[in-house]
Amino acid sequence: MLVCQMFESKNWKSFTARNFKTFPRYVRDQCLEAKRYFLVKDIDLDVLEQALQYCLKNDTVSFSNLNDTYAYFKRASHG
Image 1 (spheres, rainbow, N blue to C red):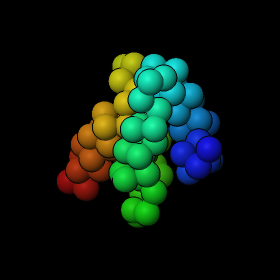
Image 2 (image 1 turned 135 degrees about the horizontal axis):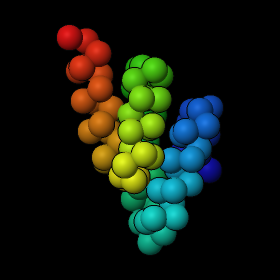
Image 3 (image 1 turned 120 degrees about the vertical axis):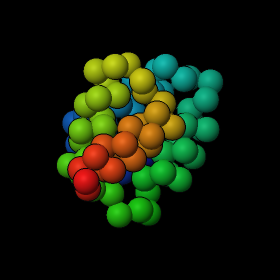
């Protein structure tokens, strides 16, 4: 599945696995969100890793939450 392999990070793989387990009826929707938020953008991998760790720790495993968390940490890292 493309979404599982978008990033090599162990946390990305854990996040996607937990996402699919948490939202089994919405996997297609979650995959579309993941692609929309993370596929063709210039993603800061350090910020993404920080957001993944936060979302996994706090059990907020939707791609919408990950995107919001990523945006928050990206803003915080730039000033």
